[in-house]
Figure: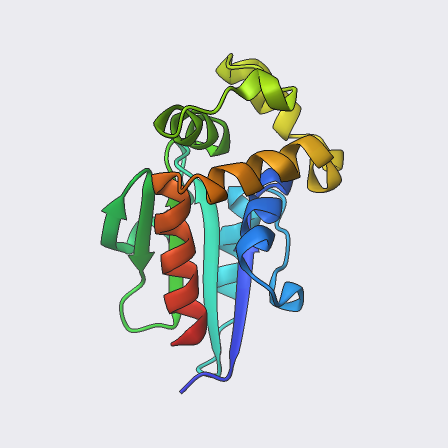
Length: 166
């Protein structure tokens, strides 16, 4: 049974989202993009470590990530596993910005109340900043989406809880 877990979110906004649900910050290692997530999964090969990459549903997926097979797909969250390994992948569909917009719409939150636009491209630019990790408006948005039980947040939280406690 593996005794360590490593999480590799692909961007600052994803890192903050995952950090919202995971109390043990030391198991989270920010990766700069989907290619870095793929490299991290390929590099750390140990039966003693469970690895979980968190990426957007990019059109271009590194070859290594194409070998992962779906376990569950629900509420804009897809959970995958690479057979015969301790490696897993969460794909946020389509990207963090559309995931947030969809979840906000599901629970009637207005993005403007948090200083964010509903234009996907502009929101993407807002979320790509390093400062997003400590942005009080972003942190409040995440907390409110969770408190209002946005479906994607509940799905992501359940998968992470099962993953970390299993």
